[in-house]
Amino acid sequence: MAEPDATPETATDATISIRNLWKIFGPRANKVIGTELAELDAAELKSRADTVAAVRDVSIDVKPGEMFVVMGLSGSGKSTLVRCLTRLIDPTAGQVLVEGDDVGAMGANELRDLRRHRVSMVFQHFGLLPHRRVIDNVAYGLEIQGVSRGKRRTRAQDMIDLVGLTGNEDCLPEELSGGMQQRVGLARALAVEPSIMLFDEPFSALDPLIRRDMQNEVIRLHREVGKTMMFITHDLSEALKLGDRIAIMRAGEIVQLGTPADLVGSPADDYVADFVSEVPKTDVLSLRWIARPADGVAPTGTALSADTVIRDAIGDIMAADNPLPVEADGELIGVVGQRDVLSLMAENRS
Ligand SMILES: Nc1ncnc2c1ncn2[C@@H]1O[C@H](COP(=O)(O)OP(=O)(O)OP(=O)(O)O)[C@@H](O)[C@H]1O
Picture 1 (spheres, rainbow, N blue to C red):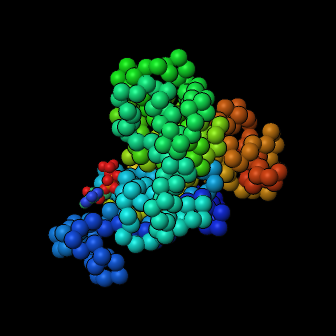
Picture 2 (picture 1 turned 60 degrees about the vertical axis):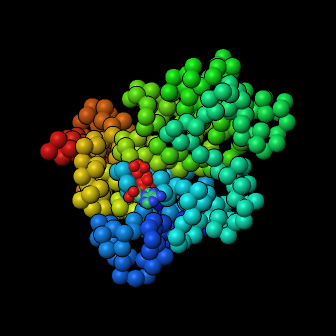
Picture 3 (picture 1 turned 90 degrees about the vertical axis):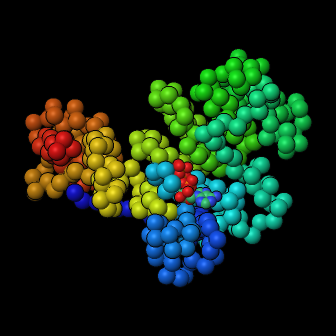
């Protein structure tokens, strides 16, 4: 299968730029990078140096307004990576730039400003204040910032309305379901008008149906508020659903970084291939991935856009007598017919 052009990396306008980041835990944390220890796998490093390389030489550029997902199994280093971004954990080496500012060089005041105003976090455990009502929990970050009572109530009410909790302002957290508590967490994170939102497995503890609602909620909020978001999850389907791009982590390293279609259509290695093997390709890949040359015959029929997800074009393709033209930017890039779709479906089944 032909691989479409990879998304270009744009370091210059990145909202978050992570460069060669390492986080090593253990007594010899500062004696690993640049030595032969850095080449050892996780188990050997642990047994020879009693040391864990939780994040190994990670470089990522998150674009403005992007929903960037970091996916990996438990222990792969996702939480450590995201905590290094605001120095809740201090990296062992490497650089993090947030909107061009070097987080490693920030003093205590700048760091506080970063965490209070510019980057907000949503965690799995909601971290709500149990004796405060919903509206006061949502307004908490603004209170810390010293915003006046009137202003913070107005802003908190707006955020409560935005996340669909209108009418629950005076409830205590314990009176709400898990999904509703997480909505309070979302509203609280949004209230400070951050430019970046970080989500660390926020929905892992929720029931599947509520989890699905919350994923849709985040997609809607992302569309409405347009903030740059980084979302950590161990769930591939969540990653594929939410991510503009996804980085797959394993043992502290990124094994592949790409769009959902890149991962599903062109997995970098057996590890990723195994992960994505159950994903229906027709649900993720666009027609660009299966368009083939028209073989000199001018195709007839209504042209399909190369960016259309295959699933959404199946009806048209199956109803047509001939392969249909596929266009990108008004140019014919190939054709797609019934046998192309059927062979892709058969590939998935096998
Ligand atoms: N404070 C610490 N001291 C020593 N090792 C740590 C510490 N924090 C994390 N680790 C180790 O670093 C590795 C990565 O952990 P991390 O929590 O970042 O992974 P994760 O992918 O977020 O996993 P999970 O989803 O289970 O939280 C693990 O091997 C973990 O045991």
